[in-house]
Length: 75
Image (tube, rainbow, N blue to C red; front, side, top):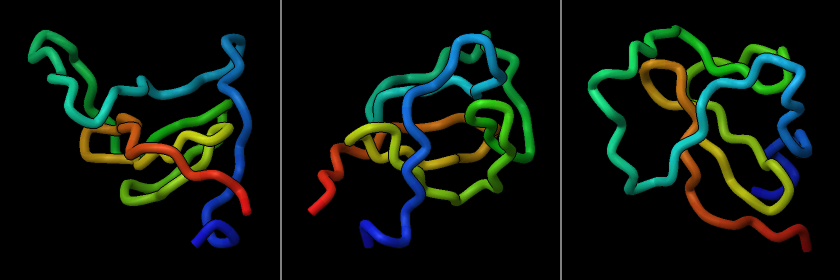
């Protein structure tokens, strides 16, 4: 699976990146996040996409937010 999950590096604070949450972190209902895609460094990814940011595995979920799904070390 490592070859199929793109490595995108670290988020650049100067570029548009959707919020990143921990897997079990509750999202505040006050957050008005509602998007049909996730962004990482100004690149749009469809909901359901997995990415690697360093060794972190991120999943684009409903509402257009990234959720950390653990670590994925390159072999």
